[in-house]
Image (cartoon, rainbow, N blue to C red):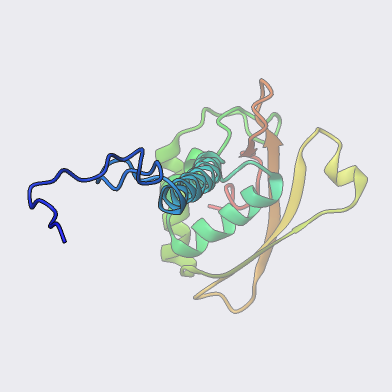
Length: 189
């Protein structure tokens, strides 16, 4: 029997069924799986990116929505700052415009801060605060302001005290609410 030569060349790829067994030319199921995984990962990254964009948009809205965007949020801001004795932000939400005939003087933020601190010294810090919107049309809409009953209890006081919190929309359509200088808690000192 004749023996095959040891250095005989292998059969060409075309004679072996048309498939190449080389490293780079893999076709068939292995290549399809890699493509499928790539598409799934790309879609997952797209979904994560879209969710991140939505989260960033919501966070930006929350970070830029002012605390005084509504009358109710401004009333809550007043109580919160009074209880914390954090009067600097409160003073920035006070409308400096005069409110004749009740208040005709020029607004001075430092004087307002001093009055609020003097009340703390005299009657104690605010330990309880609540606001209730007035519902009577004669009280709410006579001058376009929204009014709340402001009820405070101070540490040294034996009974709570009530007054009126007057809130007005900022001019020029800014849709922000400011505290009117005719609010009774500002004129109590």
